Amino acid sequence: MMRRMADESEETQDLISKKLLAGNRAWVEKQLSQDSSYFEKLAQGQHPHSLWIGCADSRVPANVITGTSSGDIFVHRNIANVVVHDDLNMLSVLQYAVEVLKVQHVIVCGHYGCGGVAAAIGHQNLGLINKWLRYIKDVYRINAVELEKYTDPKKVERRLVELNVIEGVHNLAKTSIIQEAWVRREGPLLHGWVYDLSDGLLRDLGVNMSDTGHLEAIYKYDIDE
Ligand code: CO
Image (cartoon, rainbow, N blue to C red; front, side, top):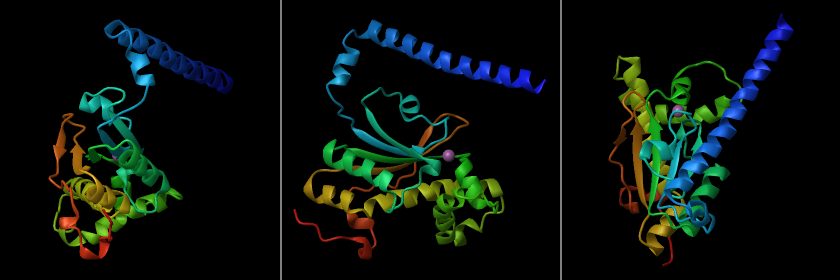
């Protein structure tokens, strides 16, 4: 019986991968039917206007929810869209997007119902993931006075989703990558957004930054023009 269940599960897995490959072929045909040189053009290079830093959650795909296409958005995703200054992966994506691709916008996008943020509020010992969620616990600590005013745990979670995005935007502004771009060229404009899984809408948190005006002085670098 166990054997049979294992076989069935392998068969199901095989079906999923076949479906993905068939889905790819159908998508290629659809693109070509709309524009026969679609892939030729994309193969020549990318000129995305934006960098998206979002959650790895499968329900928040950048291109799908913004109605954009391949080539429009450079993307970095991790658990709970954390932006911290010692993440070489995020910083490498940021440097390439800002200095080479010269994106005009950098968007940090969180989402209500984020499992990473919920886990960070909790006390379960999750092993390695503890280290990642610690960054969000730190955002909680910094904003504890506000967060502990709310009696509804859902409100606390939703607000921490927002505060984690706002912290991320500020952490971007604290990088020399962003500060150099602000001195040496126009932009990029930083944005903080939250996606609502329950209605599909993006909300702008109004934390746009395009210079170090709102940044605490200690984080400002001397940058030559
Ligand atoms: Co999430």
